[in-house]
Amino acid sequence: ELMSDGPVKCTIFNKDGTTSRPYQSNTFSQFNKGIPKTWYLLDSQSTCDIISNPRLIRNIRQVSGHMKISTLSGTTTTNWMGDIPGYYQPVWFHPGGIANILSMANMVARYHVTFNSRHGDHANQFVVHKDDGSKQLF
Image (cartoon, rainbow, N blue to C red; front, side, top):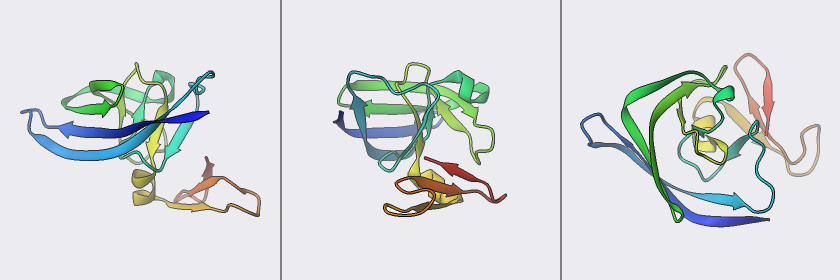
């Protein structure tokens, strides 16, 4: 069962503390069973990519700015980023997170994304069509 945590505000801060980019989105919590730590969630409500499993990313590093993530459950920040092999941009890293979230907005900014709710080989799945012709299913 998924329940909404309500609106989430993700804000990227510059090194001097000024706001670089504010975002607003919603997140959901899963009761009883946790989300597997090896899953990526393609989230149509998220405005930032944030990964909690260090085994899924490479080149984990501290950056001069930071990301502030606010939910009804509280607020957290991170100044760590990493790289997902094959993904076009760095992602935020927060080892205390509950999921590995890829923003649909960021995904469609770079790749063609389709969804067919009825028929075909990938019914009820998002399909990310990468430049090399490969597909990633969500």
